[in-house]
Length: 115
Image 1 (spheres, rainbow, N blue to C red):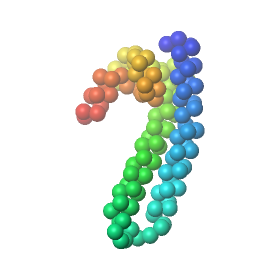
Image 2 (spheres, rainbow, N blue to C red):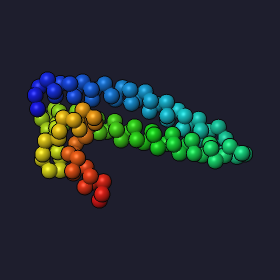
Image 3 (cartoon, one colour):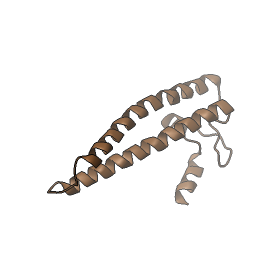
């Protein structure tokens, strides 16, 4: 991978955690409020519980993405970025452009998800 491409991916990845941390903090605050504002009684109980579940799921997804971003930045530092961790093939630029934090080529990702 060319130095210019690597620098571009690094820049994209380095800017993502700040945005994620901000939105994650908002979701965590909503979760804390939801847990302390009542016993989920009354006609809105189901909607309140569903909102709590969605907020928890979003917060967990954001946490996992932040971990993937840190891992991708570590791979840039070690010179392994853009190489599939499973098979060693080069990950196509189109895939990295769409999801800069990926560490598997599409075939290995599909195999991983199927397992």
